[in-house]
Image (cartoon, rainbow, N blue to C red; front, side, top):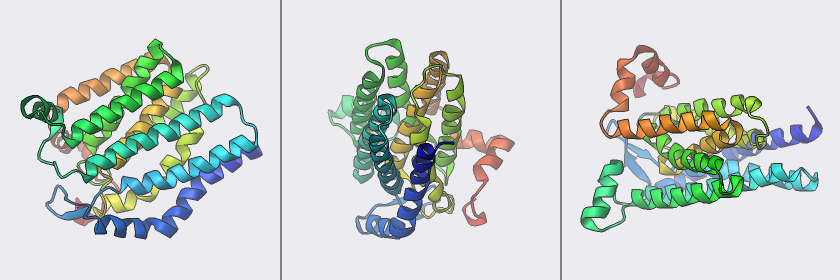
Length: 291
């Protein structure tokens, strides 16, 4: 492993760790002061919007890594992917934050948000998030691949993956586990994608920042909120779109679309609880009092 890659990996892990150690308590306090408190599935008040901390720590690391790449005259493809990753994920986190701050929490599901637009002629926070996230997904995909079929597949992955995480963010640490699975598929599958953009190194800070908040989420002391689901979902989707062969991307896109359709009629929490190994995986990492 060369010195440049070692430096990038050190920044990718070290910056989120230092930021978490120095600033995480202040993040939590600021969220409380802003009134970012929501009822969890047990009816308890929990701080939400924790994805802000994940984004800030990971983005700081990515910015430092980009600086190192510029100084080291890294190949343009590496820099291009890093810049698009950072810009796109920042946009996704912003749209999620707007939804976290919205007081309109009564409307649920895609049908509910679409119904509010159709019947009441008003844009809910969730609809604004969908519009902003879809626009971001399209622009990033066009910047990556131009007007091609891979761009369409990438746009679909980037648009749907944030909401996939949001659908699973109903129990402590569940969304983080789904993110870990998708990130592992993206990075692990990169070796089989000829000419894939070098994305995996940019995912290291996101994975590190997410791992640092795992115990807080698992203990029910923090919720990622739409900020976290949007941000981590985009990161996972970006990894899938830049590391996997097109055929595999399309297959995953169809799975995502199927999950969205099922979510309108089926409770994923009930399905998980009814399948033994899924339930054990879902419970892993949670203290006994949150199970």
